[in-house]
Image 1 (cartoon, rainbow, N blue to C red):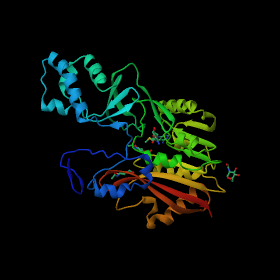
Image 2 (cartoon, helix red, strand yellow):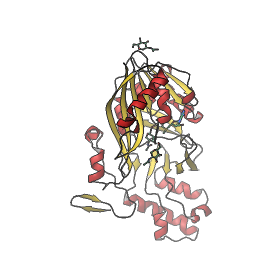
Image 3 (cartoon, rainbow, N blue to C red):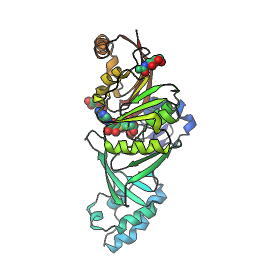
Image 4 (cartoon, rainbow, N blue to C red):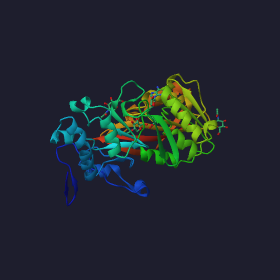
Length: 352
Ligand SMILES: C[S@@+](CC[C@H](N)C(=O)[O-])C[C@H]1O[C@@H](n2cnc3c(N)ncnc32)[C@H](O)[C@@H]1O
Ligand SMILES: *[C@@H]1O[C@H](CO)[C@@H](O)[C@H](O)[C@H]1NC(C)=O
Ligand SMILES: *[C@@H]1O[C@H](CO)[C@@H](O)[C@H](O)[C@H]1NC(C)=O
Ligand SMILES: *[C@@H]1O[C@H](CO)[C@@H](O)[C@H](O)[C@H]1NC(C)=O
């Protein structure tokens, strides 16, 4: 990228610019205006600092380190090869998780394990894994191959909560830091919360540990994620306040207990809306936190004025009660493509 007087200007090539942000400044950060002013309408998101880019020097360092291995295999350093080295990765403890845009040339497949030990050492890690994509199996499990290391469980500490999970079987939402900080700041003392898409506890744990919820019902259908969730609850000593419901949340046998329902599924949590309505406490109602991808042109579909009456009737059918709803807040989590945004609607629902 070029840096111009007015800020960063992106070239045609797909490149990323990382801007360091102090955690204390996050609440003041306006992602939407940043998207237009800095990213020229391109995708813009907040990521954890462990999503690091090696400085040019460490890129060179890796190249130097690999030189010997390459030479012993009769390979020469080329521009193509240089472009095939990892430029960004996630660090989970001693495991480095690389994206799918590196080590893709056929020559790497000819080499033995030794090359991965060299790479790991060069990047200050003990284990190496490579991601290809988030699978479409509904579990959102990333397709991850371990290149070096005995196992694929990792520890990730974040706001004094330790998340342990198997990188080959569960996803870790690195990009939702603002939403997680927001949840951690809620006051849920005395509340019963249902997390309909709990995963490894990315929102469930802040609800219990920081927001002080009296009880969280965590729904999750991926058995590997449930295993990780239980481990993480135990490590934090909050298992007694959490009930894990393994299975499809649409089949959940729970009703009218919740003060709050978290619907953290992108692109849409729409399948969970009827479930969430059934879950709300009939006498007091509660708040739904609805995650959704939206385009800049259309706010959350359920709240198109034209659909409002129909929605209200549908809700009445589901819950057998009349509800007053109020859009308390729309949180902009990130933009992941031009004009496509991940937002969370805080929908207050009270019986009328
Ligand atoms: C995108 S992940 C998000 C997890 C967590 N909210 C986070 O940010 O890390 C969604 C999770 O919901 C689970 N899930 C999707 N549909 C489900 C359903 N119908 N019932 C139960 N769990 C479901 C997936 O297995 C996955 O772990
Ligand atoms: C952020 O959270 C949503 C909902 O929990 C999830 O579907 C999405 O994949 C997450 N984003 C990232 C970058 O992990
Ligand atoms: C609904 O909320 C009221 C008031 O907080 C509470 O007394 C009642 O126990 C709740 N209902 C259920 C089923 O939790
Ligand atoms: C948003 O999610 C919906 C599914 O609810 C999907 O059909 C649509 O293509 C997504 N839109 C964008 C712009 O990603």
